[in-house]
Image (cartoon, rainbow, N blue to C red; front, side):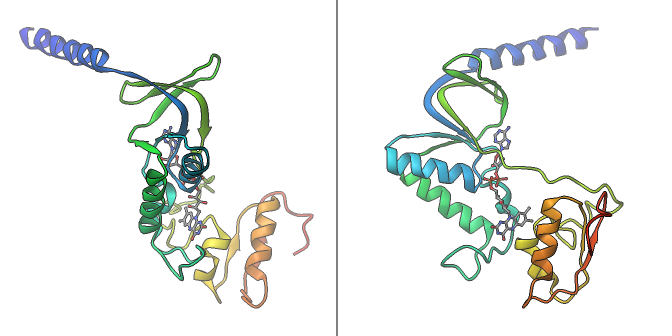
Amino acid sequence: MINKIVSSLVLCGIWYATVLMATTQHHTIVIIGSGPAGITAAYYLGRSYKMAPLVIEGNPGGTLMSVSKIENWPCYESISGVELMQQMTKQAKKAGAIFLSDIVTNINLNNRPFTINLISGNTITAEALIVATGMTPKKVGCPGEDVYRRKGICNCALCDGPLFMNQQVVVVGGGGMALQNTKLLTKKPRNFPAQKHLSTSSNNIKK
Ligand SMILES: Cc1cc2nc3c(=O)[nH]c(=O)nc-3n(C[C@H](O)[C@H](O)[C@H](O)COP(=O)(O)OP(=O)(O)OC[C@H]3O[C@@H](n4cnc5c(N)ncnc54)[C@H](O)[C@@H]3O)c2cc1C
């Protein structure tokens, strides 16, 4: 019984301390996301408009941080995602951007300044907000999809297509993006023997 009372008091104490320590800061411009989109926005705001935007990082550097080789970035034959994003972050900081490690849990756009709640318990208010939170690809739902992601199952024909040169490739999807990717994968001189399998509602599409 005493143990329960003590642990309840400790939990109350932690909650009270968190509430007491929570801060509210105001910034003219806030950017959510520190991938290429967020950092580019931060860089231009800093360099061209002499502003000091606050970048709420989420996962610092975004999706490219887990990509080992980028071969379509001008001036580099090949660069790792980590190196590229570190350089972009450095450049944006030099231009005046401020980076904050936190995650946005809620945004209130009903009144100005906008209110942004963070997982840390802190709150940010902002006159303007740029949302650069990227996207999450839809999953097919087949067995092994997570195990083979990036080891054969990919979401970007332009980025990863060359890895599968001269191999059979299946494109899953029945919309415009699937057609576009199939066209790209079968384009000469790449000459993929990609079988143009378009799943779902694509019966009317000529193979
Ligand atoms: C395996 C793979 C390989 C790829 N290879 C290439 C390539 O070779 N060349 C190429 O051009 N493109 C490549 N891409 C695509 C590239 O990664 C994306 O086009 C690019 O990252 C999109 O940038 P973004 O800034 O829009 O989003 P992201 O890079 O996804 O960044 C989104 C940011 O928002 C943050 N965020 C999200 N929600 C919150 C929240 N609630 N609070 C705070 N922050 C939040 C995330 O943490 C992250 O920092 C590849 C993608 C993948 C998955």
